[in-house]
Each structure stands twice: as C-alpha cells, then as structure tokens.
Image 1: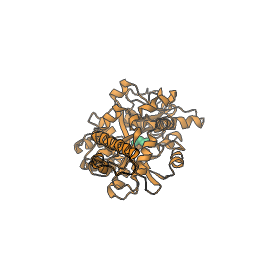
Image 2 (image 1 turned 120 degrees about the horizontal axis):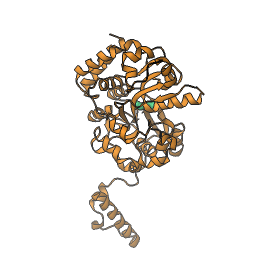
Image 3 (image 1 turned 45 degrees about the vertical axis):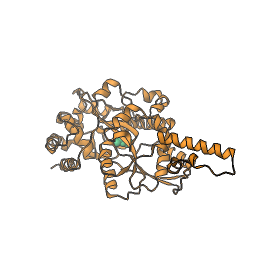
Image 4 (image 1 turned 30 degrees about the horizontal axis):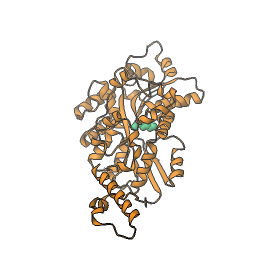
Length: 388
Ligand code: N2P
C-alpha cells in the first residue's frame, strides 16, 4: 500500500516537473528511491505467445479457449487429466511443461508445501475481486493467505443413479434413506450389479467416501482406518462392474445404473440422456449422511515457462461472464460471486448444483493427506480393486 502510494506520488511529481521545465533534469528530491525499485508499470509481456493448461475433462465450456486465444493472441495447449494422482505425479516429476494446473485442494495443499506451485502476482489478476470471500476463506485451509490458488469450480463426490434402471433392479425393495447404501451395502449392490455399478478410479476419491460411510473421518491419515474401509469395500467388490474415468459416458450410455461420481458430471450425464431422448431419468443424489465437497483450483506451476500468459488466462476466466458460462454449461457451482447473477435460473435453482444451506452444512469439507498416508491409501485401494 505504502509503496504504491509513494510510487504514484513520485510519478505525479515527475510529471509536474516534466510539464513545467522540460529542459531541466529532475532534481534529486523529486526522484526518491521508490521510483527505481517500483515495479515496471508498463511491463511488456515478452513471453512467447503460448500457454499450456492441464485441467480435468469436461470442465470448460466450448469456445472459451478460442475466445481467449482470439483476444490475447496467445495460443493455448489444453490437455486433461482424470485424477488428482495423475496430475500430482506429473508435478512431482517436474518439467511438466504446464503453466496452469487445476488440482483439488486435497492435493494442492501438499503441492504448495512441496514448492510445486508458485505464488500468484495478484497485481496481474484484477478480477480476483470477483471471488466469493467465503470460498476464499475456505481455501485458506489449503493455501494460507490465498497466495497460490484461485477456484475453478467446486462440487461434491456423491451417488449418481439412473433412477429408471435402479427402481427396476431393486424391484420391491425401496430406495434406502442413505444413498451411499446403494454403492456400499451388499443388500443393494447384489441387486444393482446387473445394471452396473461404477466407481471413480482413484484411491483418494473412493477411500475417503468409504471412510465416511463406515463412520470414520473421511480425511483420516491413519492406515488402520484404511484397512477398515478396505474390509467394507471387499464385501461389495464382486458387484462393482467399472472403475471409470469416463463416468459421463458410462452413466449416460447405460454402462452403469449407479455410480460414485462427481455432482456436475452426473448432471451432465442427466442432460445428455435427455438430449438423446432417453426415457431414463438420471439424477445426482444428496445422501442423507452428506456428500464430500471438493474445490478444484487454478495454480501456476513452479517451473511455468509462461507465467504472464498464465496470469492473463486466470484473469480472463475470473470475468463474471466466463465463470457463469462454466456453471451454466458444466453444472458446477462457481466460486465467483460476481458471476452468480448471470447463472441461468434452472442451474441456480438445481439443488444438486447450488445446494441449500442446510445440506451444505451436512457435507464433508475437504482436508488433505500426508504423502505417507496417500501411499497407504493407494495400497489399500489397489488391493481392493484387484479383489485381494
Ligand atoms: C470434471 C470434474 C472434476 C471434478 N468434469 C473432480 N475434481
């Protein structure tokens, strides 16, 4: 603040001098130290016109990259990863080539601590002001002082169903009160396996949900708890058809009638089924014991070759109209407060996208795991998957 004030004071003093007596060099007293050390106000972006982004699939509205390229003249390479584990492995290996990555906060925290992400230059992101202070407050759990992370979207891991097929498969058996029973209780999975049960294919997606189901802390770092979760999962292993990284297609295309998936993706599958004139009704459910919230956040990699372009894209995405477009087309709530007024009523009013305060209070907020815990979790998950 002080520096900024001094800088503008010095600047106006110089301008005044310049106007009055052009022939004279500025006197020493009018050229104080802050002039020399102030950031170059007219810094030119000399980076090559390139930006490499690594994000989740089905997360960006069509045309958004093209719009940014057209306006900025920066060419974007846009690649996707399917799990936090895959992104994390790339970052740990180094030289990923990516400038912007979009980790969930569960992984962003250790990535910040491990020096894999660089602090943002907030002076280059005017649109940070559009973000919801409440969401930014939540993010400080992973990123103290909000130095590295900017929300892309948030959502929750939950149960998705093809209600038509599930009702048929359950027959006389009523739907459970707790939707997690559909994917974890053998009483239900035995009936649903015929129409297809799909799980997300990632240890840090499945084990936390399983821990929550058996009444443990979803973000426990204790391997003993993972054993307990694995023991519960083992009982339904034979009923799980798919470990999926293409959940939207699998649900919409009928390979699975029930899934552990992400709220928005399940809603995309529901919309796709409607577009395809399927008579089946696909729904994202709100389990009575709560679903697991995630926040996916943009960050700039430590070794980014195009940090200026990365800041430019982040600022572009944070324009209210762009964040609103994401919510409208991808079915995920935005952390952009200024965008909320532009969200279509059918999206804003969908309780499985923008959940009610009551249900929000029931949901499980994300935390994170130590490297050791993640390793133990991966072992527990892999043996479950192999059926051992
Ligand atoms: C992809 C959504 C990713 C959500 N469509 C889970 N981080």
